[in-house]
Image (cartoon, rainbow over all chains, first blue to last red):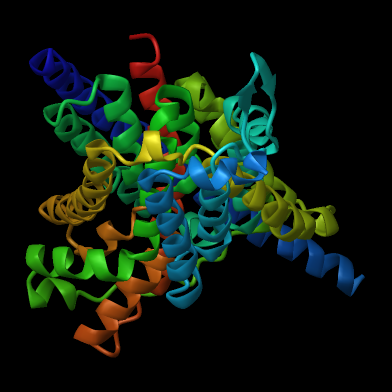
Length: 55
Length: 375
């Protein structure tokens, strides 16, 4: 019984850890694009804001 | 007269030992400041439930069930999973994800440093625990109290007491557990690797969209983590939206304090002598350390692995900050870096990895529930 539990835990452990790394790798890829997009749109926004203030 | 002495005459050695355990928890919470907000209520509740015929917990008297307030707290807060989820709203409101948004690569360490959860689960089965108990013990490695309680509450309610005590105690012991493991796995040169400061500043829109986006994506991929990640990110949205500052402050203080007290009292109600004084409690406490050691090793080794492919090397100590013990772990890594080179400033990277660990630990809990829940 203990042996069965061990093998099952090993299978779940490997699957779970790899799944977690996969999900957070996906987050990393998405977040990198997300941050790039928003930093660029922020500088545009700032320019607009400055324009308004000068008007 | 005999009725008045019932409690004293029924006091067993187990009760006395548990009253000692409760007192010890209160002692270390006050004198060492180990998670006092949790350990004081747990300790006090432990004393209360180990008084024979205590009206604080359910008692059968003359074939009639007399409900105790601590048992009621347990039923409405832990069985229903409400308390840990409410704590998640508070935690989310306390976390600034800015450092992670500025250093997205730290996301990877938030996953790598959850290695202890899965490795400890495997080791626990070797000690005779069944798969659900093993998963509940492994989750101590999430270094995240509410996640540990959430998973253990679902899979192994009997083990909730020792698991919670281990999770919260070892989070306080991160400055003692992590440094020797990090030093054993890294060279002096590696620990001296400098991380260039980033001038990138993430705007408010991104900070508002981030919790919504993470909730949607994480819940779609791992629906079993939807409640956990959703409540965490809801708390963060309250913080970042900018129009609910008063509510955000209340959530971070009053709500967190009230629920923490109720959570602690509820967990303490499970620490009766018959459930706690067993060899398995010692195993759980031991496996808790194993989980934190594996977490640290997993994060550091993953960073070293990444360095094989990167031109600009990452300081591998940052991998260890991927555990969720926030902000303790980030501080430990920063201080270790400064010890090796006083001009090295790792704090913002370490905080980024640390808050990624918060997301990683919650997702790991959801993954375990999905993989083990149907067995």
